[in-house]
Amino acid sequence: MFTNIVLIIIGFIFLIKGAEVLVEGASGLAKRFHIPEIIIGLTVVSIGTSMPELFVSLTAAVDGYQDMAIGNVVGSNISNLLLIVGFSAILRPLEFQKSTKFIDIPICFATTIIFMILANIGQGISRLDAAMLSILFAAFIIYTIYMAKSSSKMDTTEEKETKERKTIWNILFILLGIVGLKFGADFVVDNAVSLARIFNVSEKIISLTIIALGTSLPELVTSVVAAAKGSSDISIGNIIGSNIFNLLFVIGLPGIINPINYSISYNVDMTILVVSIIMLAIFANTGKKNCMTRANGAIYLTMYLSYMMLLFAKQ
Image (cartoon, rainbow, N blue to C red):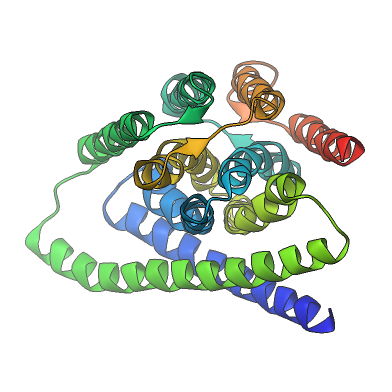
């Protein structure tokens, strides 16, 4: 048990340093190419920090652990919104871009509803359902690339040469950050699960709490670091992009390989997720204009703690 605790601490160190390097590289790319940070957050950062969810769900689906594959994604998305956005907002109020309010959040909401409908039809994600989710993910990536191109500006030859040199370092920072996040998440998740099993916690509760929180640690650290540095676009974009990535691709890819069963008991958790997204839209359009306040963050954190208590009360 002592070894597990030591490895978890090492995992946290990897996560923190990996997140710092990833945010630095992503911000550098955004500035070098005049690309809005929200685009970087929705693509490179969100996909990079969602790699732990992808590997966990893929392994779980292939090995036949259906609850773990679904619970990891649903639990991670709830943690992303209620815990991570909530904590980030308390640390420093988050500003919403107009595109985030009127495009990205609605896409996240629509994605969640589509997943919920497909999962309840036949009580599972078939290969056809998984293919549909993967196609939607490809469409989302195309949309973000289109936004990036429309937002970029042309540079002179000298500017391009300078930026190419700096871009190499930024890309290396991003790759190094993702590697650190991946290894850190593995250390934390694997050893946290081992500790949880010592206390006889069920597979579903493990997937919705320990594993979900563990695989969300990259998003947590990345978004908190971004928020502390004043990069609200990366903080919010990272979470929205990760949630879309989780539902469309983290479930889509494993589902194509091996159909995933869905327990209707997850509808309660999915409903909490839907309500959380609706509240995010409300926060973005009420109170202090275009801003998620510390009070909003406190509401989110209270909801998350209540959700955790509900899970363990049902155990």
